[in-house]
View 1: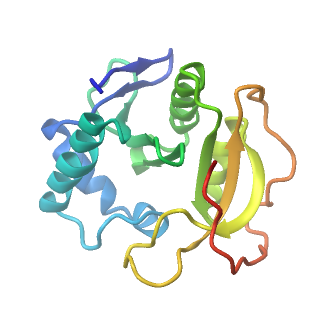
View 2 (view 1 turned 180 degrees about the horizontal axis):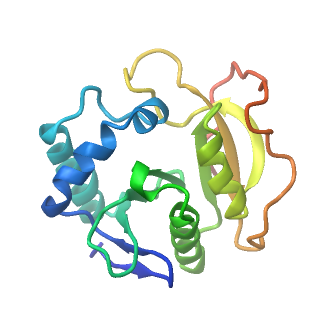
Length: 201
């Protein structure tokens, strides 16, 4: 798959490059990114190079995973990353501190979902670690329907032991993009799950 750009009036999604290396390192050292994602800790230029080689470039080349850097229109600053994986049709994203509170994550998620659903995907799956209220708020604003607490599809940072508990939500082509009821309240206690997450059909 050849990489392509997605744009709206508020956000531009372009493939990260070596020119973004310093911004990727700084973002992945942010405590919130490290808390809620599985980026390596500690994180340095070598980890960023591996991300660009093994995730970004290899993902596009094999059509396994499409990864974009999030930028404001007219800006070269990378303020986040959003990606979708074909196997489970799942979406993930993170934002640097400089990109938060501006609606960029919601716009980026909407752009990606609109594109893949228009291409014929039957759904898009979102999973966020239980307690990640900021990520859940983005998925809710993008119109995802909350499904519950499950064992996540992907292993944790250590790659051993049970997969982490995650909130799961789904977006269908027939769904409107209005926020749906049923999401956990921010900061509220959550139920637990003991069974592995079912794979997407």
